[in-house]
Image (cartoon, rainbow, N blue to C red; front, side, top):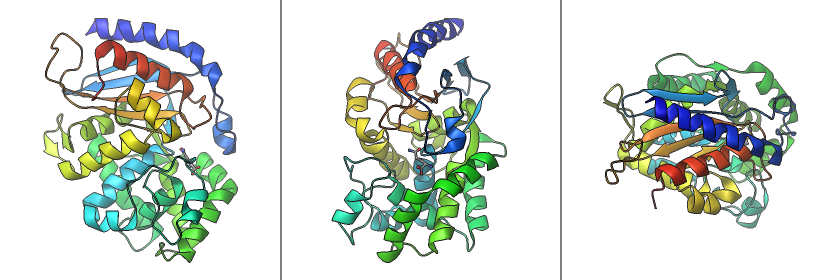
Amino acid sequence: MQEVVDQLEIWVEENRSHTILGETAKYIPALAEQDPSQLGICIMDYDGDTYSVGDTNVNFTLQSVSKIISFVALCHFKGLDFVLDKVDVEPTGESFNSIIPFEIHRPGKPFNPLINAGAITVASMLPGDTVEEKFDRFLLFVEGMIGHNLELDDEVYQSEWKTAHRNRALAYYLKESNLLDLDVEEALEIYIRLCSISINLKDLAKIGLVIAHDGFDPVEEQQIFSSDVARIAKVLMVTCGMYNSSGKFAAHVGIPAKSGVSGGIMASVPPKWHSEEKAFRKGCGIAVFGPAIDANGNSAAGTMLLRQISTEWDFSIF
Ligand SMILES: NC(=O)CC[C@H](N)C(=O)O
């Protein structure tokens, strides 16, 4: 579908101007060095065909996009009830690394798995006796969806590990509230490793595609995780996936999505059988990369690009 690529090229170039509305994440030194003018997108359709436009030959780290994948993985391995007993599914209205909601509601469980407190808790509960085993089980789960090996970006990992003062503080709160089975340093290690996994747009779009199709991989024709898990994942993406912009994102874009401070966004467009004339009626996975992020931690231009695409192609689920 050359028209789709042509159209995307116009929209990517139009939205590239919005990169100046954000800046690269400064609190993780290795992310601060990314080129803020980049913007790229990959859409993967039901048949596995991809439409890639803009800065697409890039690898970036998952950062907070890993949080929805680790939630899905943990639910898959240990069951939804087990996980929802440990983390809630409520938005906080605070920044992703805020201590405030946790402190106010102590000793309550973290509000949701997409804020750092919840994600550290989830990462620490992944199956495996050691950090290494937990990481390997997680990688295998993701690699099962994308069909090849993934690697850690060691530079980003080291950079975040050395500067993770706030996350370390959060982990101490969790430990003190008996929510962490692991030691603080081990819980941080597995969490930061997940955030530092290097990925490309095509692979991220594939994961988005599987979530969009309720845990079913339409390309390989296999169920990767249950539709119940996918349903809760999509709820979390809509209500908490874009942090304090989640309401506006739902209103103006309307696609379950998860962002990360490296500038990645993974979005899952479920099938929509009416209005046949529009593109991607069988649903699709979308990955966007634009490292200039706004005050809420979302790719500034990536969000605007998704808004335009969703409006023009009627992707909103609402
Ligand atoms: N929003 C994000 O992407 C945050 C992830 C980052 N690794 C952190 O813990 O701060």
